[in-house]
Length: 159
Ligand code: 4NP
Image (cartoon, rainbow, N blue to C red):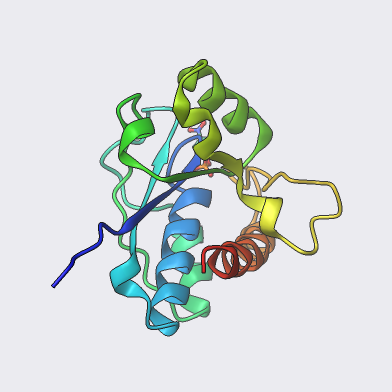
């Protein structure tokens, strides 16, 4: 019997409490629905460390629950060693994307780093998932929709 290592994917935002936990939760749900759980290892992280150890923002939890998802991540900071640990590193916005590229320097991990919304068919050139931290539940729902479309797109690409 041969065992293949799961393809490791992480979602990265700033605090790992609003946007990237939604990425992790939505992608896990889609992977499960597709019967592909054995193919993937899925996490999320933040470039900043202020919220390490916290559960997701209550507004992300509410919106996720409205879509039948229970978020189970605990905030962690993205570290240089994670550049090796993951096969695909999905940045939620341009600042994060460039921060990750700086961290990777000229190393081989550069090619693993992408903007999440590259796979959103409705992105129309805007590849950012806006930070909803100072927004309301509607902003979190908008984030949810963008992240869900993008996750569907990535799951399709990763066949
Ligand atoms: P996130 O949102 O990056 O989507 O988790 C934020 C959460 C916290 C902060 C900024 C953005 N903050 O500045 O504390």
